[in-house]
Picture (cartoon, rainbow, N blue to C red):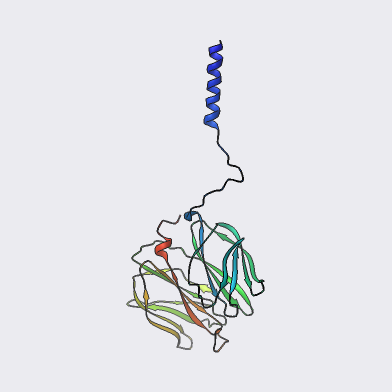
Length: 243
């Protein structure tokens, strides 16, 4: 009888050990790998607002993001989820305060552009339907205030890609081969070329966002219309499959 009771006790103890799931305390630090982050590239396209300070939650993304992009184009790891983005200027006056939903392991471009005397954000997915490190990728964005509704953006080498884009509009990424391309923005209604870049190099594994920014009511100076070409290092981002 005593031996039976001991066997029963050992059996119950074994069941408890097998069924036990250890729950870490709230103070346990969780290791976060790069694949668990979202990636955000911030770009200042608001000419009247230099040195923008940008927060994602409590995390400072940029302390002084210039219109001229002196810091260069780079992705910063941000925890995914619904994040409060805050854009501040000068004496910490708030230009934008809003919630942004970020997905794990997905890259984004956070464009900050000007609308009269205030700013507006434009969050773009930097995702591709398929990726090859031997290809190049490009897309168009129009965030130039007071731009004509008849603007045509074109990339041309042997086979041109031309798309009409209105204000606050953008395209998907197009796939092409690494090569030198002519980039043109034309006002189709006036039959005039606004911007032209000859033999711009698209590199393998890279993406390019061709942005028309500024304000067409500003004749000259820093706020006048200009083209910004953003380079995305897809060869670094897509070293592993994004799921």
